[in-house]
Length: 239
Image: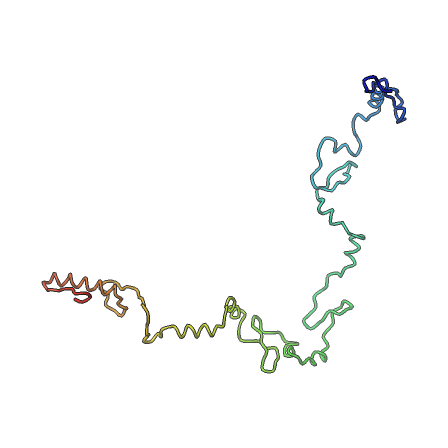
């Protein structure tokens, strides 16, 4: 029944439709619920009523049967189980166990055993590898093909071979260009405006006397001569 104001009164609301509460009005229903509720949560959820769980962790039941968060397994790790189709350990156990080491003269056969090479088969190899079927290569060397097309060890070491790293064009062409443009060590013929370090004032040895050294020597010579009473005059670049 709806009151004149359009609202239900406490006395007008009953639980007849729901059929769950025996009381006939709201207040009595609330009192009934209050008497039936659990005052203190004591079940598995008791550990999460007041405190938050560890973030991004997998939920587990702890040693007391309460809800808890795993300290070792994250939600990311739990996600790795996605698409797993059968027992993980069974799948791991089905894989190949650790293989023990063989020797250079053995091969690992399909039945998972080490077998010795058949010498007659090896001796029949005639390709480029034939010189080194049973012999190791010289360590840390560049390899090449010999005059017969067989595998050969070059005299060039790996260290020397690495020197070509960064070279952008023919080494010989670059050397030839330098040889053409350079001056000889013996009787060099310089072009352009070559420079040389300026020797110390008063030096008297086989050093190159550049113009700076000569001008200083001339200036010092004029001063010394004037003091000696000699007459010098300067005309252009000549004394």
